[in-house]
Image (cartoon, rainbow, N blue to C red; front, side, top):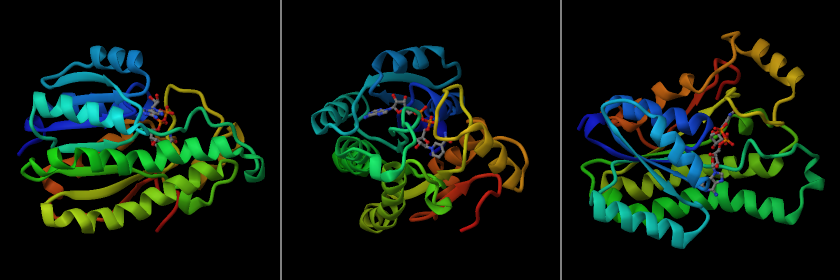
Length: 250
Ligand SMILES: NC(=O)c1ccc[n+]([C@@H]2O[C@H](COP(=O)([O-])OP(=O)(O)OC[C@H]3O[C@@H](n4cnc5c(N)ncnc54)[C@H](O)[C@@H]3O)[C@@H](O)[C@H]2O)c1
């Protein structure tokens, strides 16, 4: 099955890297469901996409089981299957850096609820539709902040470390259904969205430390995503692919 024939859900697609994933997939001809807590942003992003594929916006909080079930019901009615799921939504650009001992219980719980529980919940709820595909691919978006041991947002790093670990076990539990699960782990990616998780000095230091001395944009992630969702990676599961310009090695 080519990407053009696939039904693919991208969470967190209203802005940033998620919007770039959706753009690439619509260009490939896929039917893409842009699911985001920011329903208006998802609708605007979907309306801006051009290509042979189709873009559909859906408002969703990935931490909310009832919301995930409503998405499953809509997808079941419309398509009867899901061929690709990109667990990209995360609390990220809104994070304010601080020493970990100043993170509040509420910040910890909400970040983990969205960034770690969300991907598990969505795969669990969409499982019947993923099983209905001829060979579904789940891509969990991790972060090389884990291997770098980046400081200032420990709740985020802990959640992404959980995503990396979850992928290994999910791949084994879903292999018998022909469903593949991999992690795409970006290094620092500079999008249209301002954020505090990289200071200007850290940005320059990390670009200098990369093998490729240029900043990454969202378009640097999309080819690897398309590969992981497509049938060219049919024998690839339970893996972590770092896309980081050579900043850190596994
Ligand atoms: N930008 C980077 O440098 C970088 C590096 C490594 C990993 N990542 C990961 O890549 C992904 C995208 O990063 P980005 O820079 O585009 O982030 P971003 O913060 O700009 O975008 C995140 C998107 O997720 C949505 N979202 C947040 N909470 C949600 C929820 N509960 N339910 C549904 N949607 C929700 C937001 O509305 C937003 O559209 C994230 O998983 C992030 O952790 C980013």
